[in-house]
Image 1: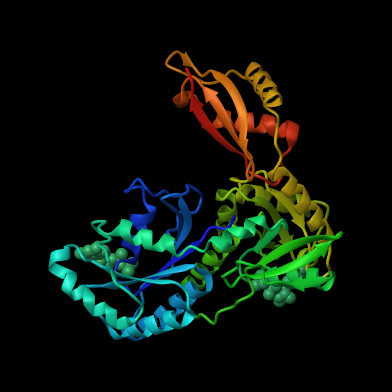
Image 2: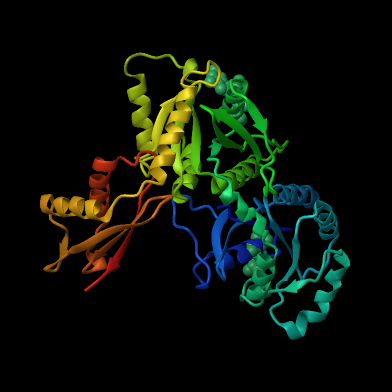
Length: 438
Ligand code: GDP
Ligand code: GDP
């Protein structure tokens, strides 16, 4: 189930962040943001009238000088063209039409992607509407007046956005082949891994139907079974600005992870696990995907009998929010343990779709409660009535209790561990929803 991607593009100070926050924040109740480890406002999950989409803000750091504004805008527009299904091109009624707007509009028009021309800071329709008409000159359709700051016209704008969603894209869900995203920082060896797998397998480079983005999908057959690998390394940009490069790499990761069943997070063994690795892994975690951590370049590490233990510990510490992740040590260079990667992928796929019978779950819960008393507060003790699994990908459980406030995070973790003791669920997060029942 691939979610559409909507990108915001525009000059500095036209109100990109304000619009992004209006759509992503909790200020208006119609939209919501996934809680997660990544606090960056580069992307957000938005819902509008039963349409879910991923919103990305392509605008990065403030440009230092006027003459680089245009080149930076082109860069942003290119990212949007590469990754988005619908582009929101935002302009500013108070600054009026400027030359850079026209140049970027040309570029967007040539891409043949759906583009919405949004004119921001129209805080009063009466006062500014005549100025809005000027934007027809851009030749990219009807300008949509909004005020991001006072949240005017946002609903009409979203109606237009969702009209452009391509229903064909949902067909990807009917494709039975497992989709694997290979993600990680630049230079960890993502391309090398995929190339090595391609070299050792019969490969059909496929244009998966419904894929409107630039992710490069490769079908790799292993044990007579096809897998679709989504490569995020494929396209490289000659970008000089480090922050922009990082933003681009995060955007690529989010859009690839969205489409994947299992995510292989590649870490460079010669560097060890870093905060940036954690950020990337967090994207897969908060989206409930199957996760395998592949420590690559294992051939280049000097080892003794404690090395694997030391690496495992470091990874578990830095990625403490995902203790369930599978870890493996590989080398794209020598091919060490690469066939094992497919075994792990199969196992994680199985765990993502595993369903546990309600009877068995309740036995586990009853036993767990007998072993460790549930928490209490001010003389009132938590009672757990019933547990049942309501979804897969990721496996999701509803627990009915007497009082939600009494359910402590650590007790949920305790129950999770008890379920994992029996069923493993390696490589997949588990989701718990707590409901009250009298
Ligand atoms: P960005 O650089 O494109 O991300 O722009 P920002 O979102 O940071 O906004 C730039 C400035 O415009 C800020 O001072 C905002 O408060 C202001 N702004 C944003 N939206 C509106 C709006 O709808 N009306 C008015 N009057 N000001 C706005
Ligand atoms: P990407 O940016 O993540 O796609 O990384 P690349 O696949 O381009 O690899 C970056 C560099 O690491 C290249 O110089 C590779 O030759 C090297 N590299 C990749 N995998 C391995 C490996 O398993 N062992 C060693 N020693 N080097 C590797």
